[in-house]
Length: 150
Image (cartoon, rainbow, N blue to C red; front, side, top):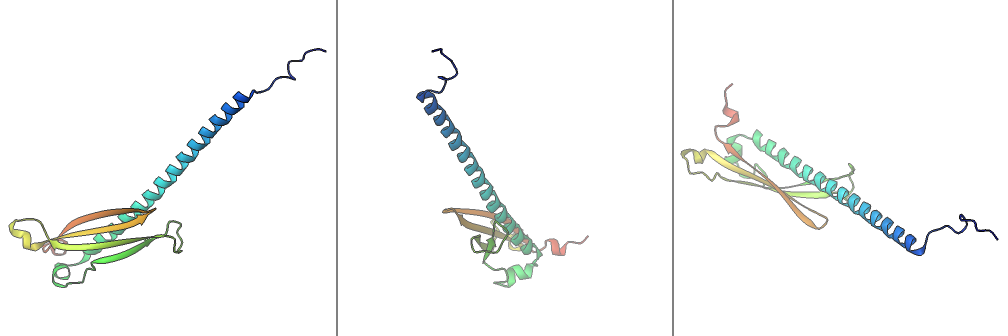
């Protein structure tokens, strides 16, 4: 009987186990990377929506005159809710952002402090069991943009 080298060639059990182990590490790393990437994208979407809500509320405050801001209590709502549906639909699985508007005297001691108010808008939401919060502040003055002469 003659010996043919191709018939007895193959992988040993140790080589197969090592190959499966390396493949397992690669698959787990790939899954962890993809999962982390999708989580980061979702967080950035939620954060961007929170920033859009804050900007929208700030722009609305900019349109009010001094009398509406200071002399008409309740004209600026102190709380609000906004929704975010990541898939673009209107199903109930989206996030709900809750917000508050705080209008107080400005923390300054200059002579014009009676003509200045601080507006602080806060937005909070819960995603994956974690509470998130963003905030924007601005000043409103009695002799601001509405009285500016071009």
